[in-house]
Length: 172
Image (cartoon, rainbow, N blue to C red; front, side):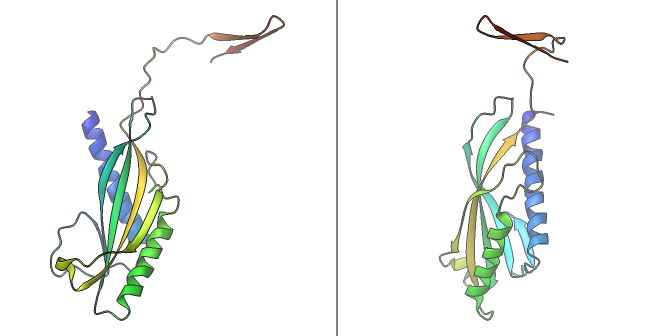
């Protein structure tokens, strides 16, 4: 599998895990989707999210690529609903709680960091909704670990500390 296919697969798995975790963790949401196409008739309240930014992360030195991804979620509640702004804020608070130390069950993802939530400015296309945005960052390792040295047979490593001490560590 090429590195491109590996990255695609990992990012797809990550998005699927985020969607499943949010659906399970916040059952009050009627619809959760990554990068949806907005159309009339989507059930509300809903949460839509997307990865909106990628920056290089610290190189792990093992053949994988490290990126720091920014995710943004938007929670939409019908504006006509009783206390819609408070209900949107409550759902945003539930998402913030769900994000605490979240890795989405994926071993290539580090815990969530830099969480921010707040009401969004009115969106003309969504005039009938009250919206809150939640943003977070997450470090992701893409690709497979590669050992670049030849596999040698077990050997010994000799460490000395001055003339008086000699320690031998054996591999294998």
